[in-house]
Image (tube, rainbow, N blue to C red; front, side, top):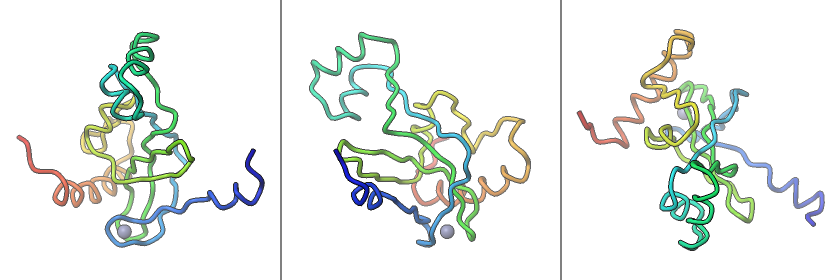
Length: 142
Ligand SMILES: [Zn+2]
């Protein structure tokens, strides 16, 4: 069992991928990642094909509680969504969420295609960081 000191060391800060400034959690809910077939389970959990197909057969979708998309704020670049994953050693890695990541969540509130419940203000700031993101990382596909 882990002691207090080990726990405290796991506190992780997140930094803006554009300017390296510390990011702040928006406090909104996390969008957990789902896998829909054995292949996705195997690739993401890095387990054997046999184990993966076993998990896939248990239900139509597998919810990965160690991978989610969460909203953060940079004082310069505004709101952005990070894809966060935690490995078996509880180490956290993160990167900007892609459109493909959103398609694997249960809610899919794709910030580049907002639904009417998102306020105009938060839409504008998320669009700003996503515009940069799209330019930097995605090749335009229609
Ligand atoms: Zn920034």
